[in-house]
Length: 72
Image (tube, rainbow, N blue to C red):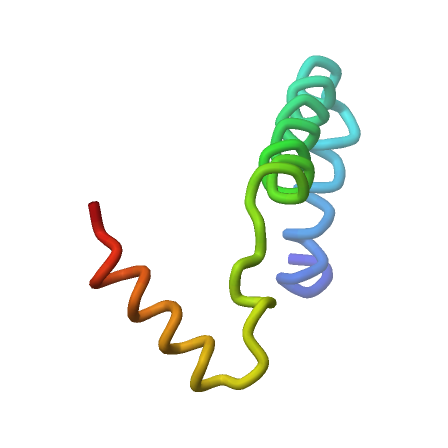
C-alpha cells in the first residue's frame, strides 16, 4: 500500500473525473442549474425583507410576526 489514504482517495477521484466524457457534460449541466437556482433566482425574485430593519430586536419581531400572525 503506497502513499497515504488521503492521497489514494484524491487520485481515485482525480483519475475518475479526468477520464469521464459524458459525465463532464452532465456535471456542467448540474452546476449551471444550481447556479441559476441559488444565485440568479434569489437576486431577482426573493427580496431581503430583513434588511429594512435596523436592530436585531426589530428583525426578530418581524420574523415572529411573519411566522405566526400573518399566516394565511
